[in-house]
Image (cartoon, rainbow, N blue to C red; front, side):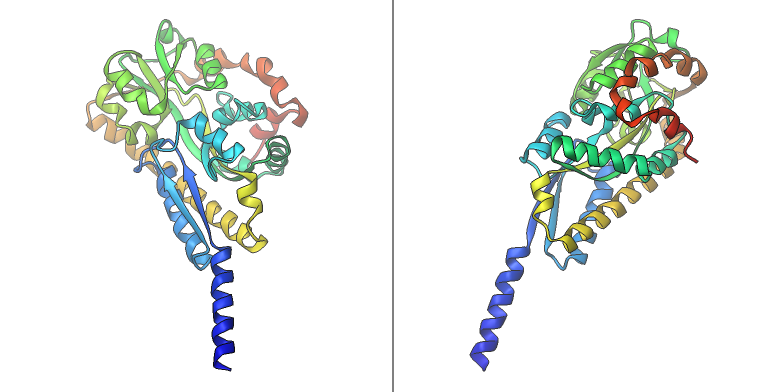
Length: 321
C-alpha cells in the first residue's frame, strides 16, 4: 500500500511538472514605466492563481529586441508575449491605424471603453485569423505630447521641426499631417538623439517622458494631446494554445488585472507629472489643440481604407459613452 501511494505521488508530481510552463514577456519600456510595473504584478498574480504552473518573466528595456522585433517574435514564435503599441501592430495589421488617428479618443478611459467593446472583440478575432497570434490584453499608453527645444503652440511652429517618432508608418503619417519633419528613431536611442540635437523634439505620453528622463534634455513641453495610444499584449498562438483551458483563463484574467493597473498608474500620473516637469525647469505650453485637430483631419479620408471591413469605425469609437 505504501509503495502504491508513493507511486501515485510520483505520478502526480511528474504530471504537475509537465503542466508547468515558463513564458517570456518582452517590452521596450524602462523598469519604472507603468507598463512594466503592471505586467510584473500580473505575473505575480498569475503564478499565484495557477499554483506556480505559469511563470512569466518580464524583460524590460528592449533586452529581447526593439519594438518591431518584439512584435514579430511574438507572432512568429521567438517570444511568448510582447507589449506592442497599436502603431507598431499597424505595420502588419492595418486595421489598428484607426486607434492612432489624432483626437479620436477623449481620454484614457475612452481607450479602455473601446478595448472592451464588441467591435474590438471582432478586431481581435480578425487579427488572430490573419496572423495566428492572440491579443490577450490591452490598455492605454497615455496621451502623447511634444517635448523638445522649442515651444509648439500651433502647427506652424512645427515647420522644419525634426520630430523623433517610432518607426511606424502611421506615426510618421500623423507627424507629417501635423506639419513636422518626422525622424524615426528607436525609443532606447531617443534620449541621446535629443541630447545631441539630432532631433528637435519627440512626442510621447507623460509617463514615458518621465521614465526615459527626456525632461533632462528638453526645455519645452507642449501639450498637444494629439494621440491617445493603446498598447496590446500580443501572444504567440502556439504558446497560448498549448495551455489547458483553465490556465488560459487564469492567464487572460491575470493580464487583464495587469492592464487595469497600467491604466490606473498612467491616469493618475498625468496631472502630477505636469507639476514635476515644471519643477525640473521645463516650460509647459498649452498648444492650440483645435488647430492641430483641424490640421490632421484629412488623415481620416486617407487611411479609411485600412479599417473599411469594419465599417465606420471612427464614428463607432467617438460615439462610445
